[in-house]
Length: 125
Image (cartoon, rainbow, N blue to C red; front, top):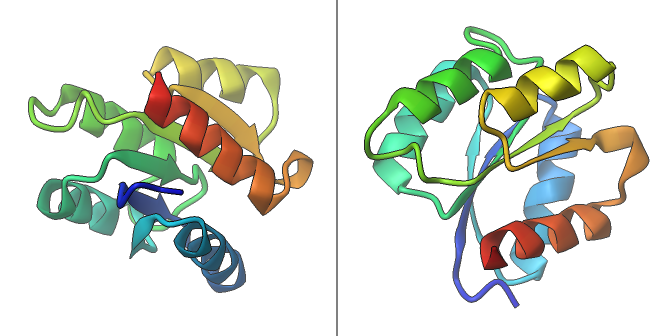
């Protein structure tokens, strides 16, 4: 199970966020949700998540900006981040990993079950 690990899901699509929240919660994770980049930064600071699932295309502050800000923050830089997006261009994947993401998942290529498996794998590392 999720051993009560806390996941911050940053996703602005309501349908997708509900689907991932339900899947993660059913897998034993505690899930916080943020629907834009600024809210993600606020909630990351407050909730102290064990892992962040981060979309790139977000209102107010995109996922690359959030990732950069997280990695510059003393208290948050060690929190693993998995980019969860539909942006699958090689440059975008490389940019996400270069900015410090632990993994880069293209939504269309992974089922929610596979996403949970990736979350578990990163949390064990």
